[in-house]
Length: 424
Image (tube, rainbow, N blue to C red):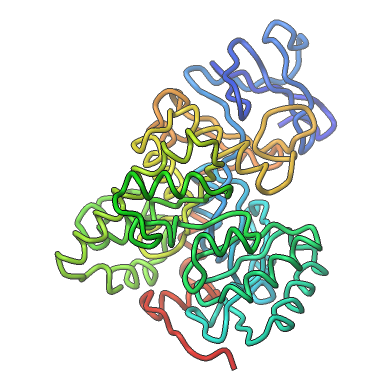
């Protein structure tokens, strides 16, 4: 490994810089940053190099929807996910847990604080309830003072609470994320929500549209961004089926979490319920190209570690579902890197350009042409330092034996059944 002050170069077959594919180019790294992107023939003679034949070099992937626990770090990094947006957590509890995680680099985390609820909360370990608009404005102010760049409004937040929180958040320069429930789609838009999660509340039946196509057109006409997380709906429709036991990525999941997934209600749901969910997945998927053609921003998130969603690898699955729904592999790769970074309001990640953090992933093949090549991770760098993936797997196995129970893991203890209760 070169000295921290010395520039060294990665020479892949091709580079995806977050927007375009570049041939015959090399990436220079100095310390933790990308210092140059130059033609291969311009690499200085004698400079340290890493040759990667047959490989596409991309920015570190960004998961725009997770609820972080320390055990997830290992799988995220193994899958090339170096930045995450946490959209609901007990931050005061989980950050010290992450600080105690030794021997492994951490992804960059963009926090949004707890789920902001109304008079009832569905997930008490990671939520805060509110009875009045003054209460929710106060919470938003507290989160703003802590430097959080976004808030997440959840299912039981009523239109008046959503409007109050959104107005306060915008006054503090914060982005507003919403999971619809008590507040409908059009009410959320009127209230100023910037981005919807899961397409919740966007089915044709939820908005009074007569058909799937009419519903998709109505949703696409609304000026709002979407983190669609198709993978969570797909997982709930198929949870418990034999393919999960054959998934090699399961090595990145602790045994206790695997058990919780296998015992969740969704793993034993009646066939009729699975059928209903599968039909909803089809409707959500059919809406994707309609949203895209209308110019709506589509972000890529996994909702890990909800039941069946393997941290990091579920993001690969989400990108693949977006391609199945009609995006090109290049569109999906742009979304999981640069587009996600724009939603995070940062230019430090999601791109390969001078001044960006040297979070890099090398994939065998080319995921901008064949999205399944996301599963072929060859190398990962976090802040210019290459991660030993074999050592990472060993560290994961040891950590899983002694891991602390994080707030999101309490949902596993509940077997992913909402523990809805009054906020006070």
